[in-house]
Length: 59
Image 1 (cartoon, helix red, strand yellow):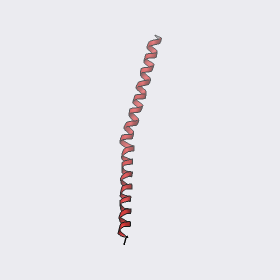
Image 2: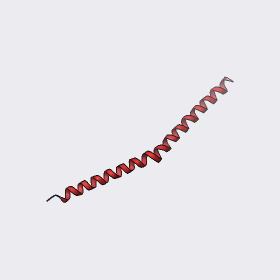
Image 3: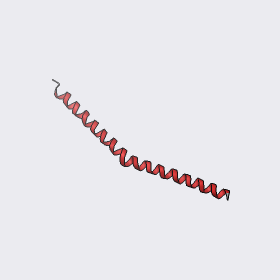
Image 4: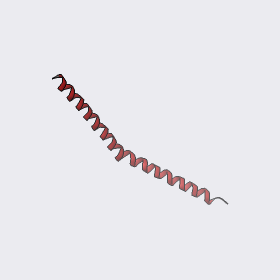
């Protein structure tokens, strides 16, 4: 009886940790990554505009 309980407890714990990890990875992929990608795109556009502005006033 003791071994069955221990085995079930370990399997349940591993399953729960796996489910939580999967949920966190899915959240990161669907929410965090697109936000970071958009921020990087905005930053790149800002850098390009700044370079263009500086090069237009050279001379």
